[in-house]
Amino acid sequence: MSPRRRSNPNAERRLHRGPAPAWRGNRVFYVAVEGEATEPDYLAMLNREFGSDHQFLIHPLYKRNGMTPTRVVAKALEQRDEVASGDGRVQLWALFDRDQHHEIPQAMRAARAGGVRVAFSHPSFDLWLLLHFTDVSGQQDGSSRIVHQKLRQCTGFETFDLHNDKSVSGPRAQALHGRYLDAVRRAKRLVDDCPSGACSASDGHVQSCDALRRDPSTDVWQLLVELGIAGR
Ligand SMILES: [Zn+2]
Image (tube, rainbow, N blue to C red; front, top):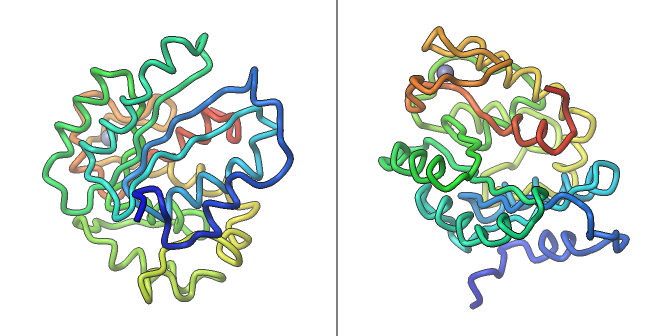
């Protein structure tokens, strides 16, 4: 099976559907992600909902069965030549999670060295989904168990992560509609509440802030800001 095949074939087809916009002149975001379904679906949704208005195109980069954080960064770096020839309109991003990974600091360093923007989530990207519906507080200790429990109480997400289904399409995508800015606001508040005491939503996490201690937090909101969907 091709490594780009998806467990949910509709999600990938949808990415290429819709009007054929004049991509030339648009901003291009290569966004490498850890998961094989949730993040690619979410990014495809951003393309559909906001791509033409805000003149961007996201290329989700993912692999069947997912990638570790350092692999995610390496995947983004494969597109480095595009940045060099992109006339300032191409950005590389890496989205990865705390989970129980042991290579977060290495992945962060590789990203910084290679000019890859990182949107790190602690414990996982699924926290970002939950923030569309409600505030989240309290340490998660690298486990998404509580996040998933709460997410399954939200309309559209009742069966999320059950039967190995972590897609974000159909009713789930509809449930997120109109809630993006709420998620940004809540995620920013988590930066203001960062245990380091030195971080703020206006400036992000300071360099000295240990990513492993940003529990809970997610910086996916910064991608939405960069895309022009949310204000700074
Ligand atoms: Zn911080």
